[in-house]
Length: 217
Image 1 (tube, rainbow, N blue to C red):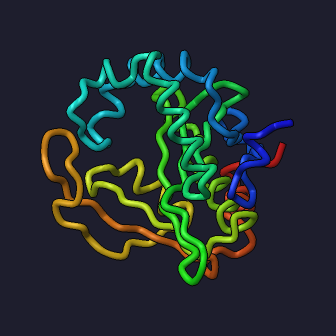
Image 2 (cartoon, rainbow, N blue to C red):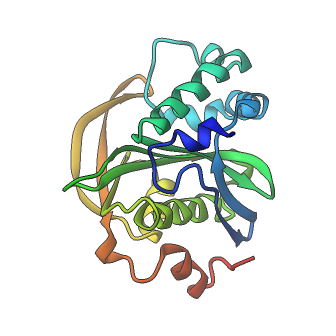
């Protein structure tokens, strides 16, 4: 018996999502696994310069925090939150290989039906539509099987690439959060962006396909 699957509090979890084909390859979302540690560590360590300027600061050195020995506790923490119904932690796969992560967090049902969504993609997969496809798949899953009404995200105003991805997926700006998060050695302003299910016509993935940015496999 698969206790992990049967103990989940989430509708739609740990269901894989996708695939969707973009210029960089075939993109899918699937649940995090304990055996992801080696690939996760290798990419995070190699991509420090690519990732660290946009991620929250911690007191733990980047190399220590992303050593392979850290993954079991990271993975178990993500899965524990998923079992409680508060998070959907996904790996972004590109042509079957670990290419990043997408997380839907602070999942709230009831009258709010809301969550935040965030992602990171390996530098080897930037510019080929991977982030946009992964975000589209995650949004469709959140608004579909998970039955959410609103998704929001925060992004630094300087992060033009991520702002473009969010805009292409239909997120709109709602305001500026002053000195919102400690990132890259200082308290940084972040834009709050959001989208509700009424603003999505059909699905985000279908819109990408119709616009010629992606195709079904």
